[in-house]
Length: 162
Image (cartoon, rainbow, N blue to C red):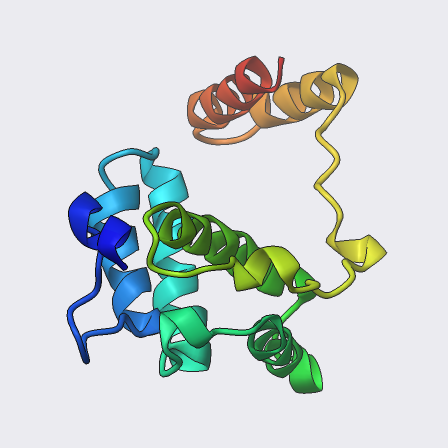
């Protein structure tokens, strides 16, 4: 405790972080200034929609892997959410809790110990179009009204897929 006090990381008595408070602080003050906008958007949704309502009431230093595993199961109950959504919440929790451990607010990263649900085969990454398929798409788009718009969209997609 003396080391924590000297380092300025000692908690005030009665002021332990809840998971909700930590995640909200982390996403806005730590993640947002340091990650891309798309990454931040994913983190923010995972925090606001899944993690805070699901495990936010727990004290940060008492969060267990089983709390997160239970959340992942609830997210998938009755087919409401796919495993990919639980995986996004898991990755977000692992990153945020890793920072809490690094800063001395928690002794362990419960998300690093938790097992996320198994991904189904139909949730794998989308297979991009081949060059030949894009060329056929452009030829068909050229036959349609507003063909320039369609070609620009497809051309941008092709350029980004290289």
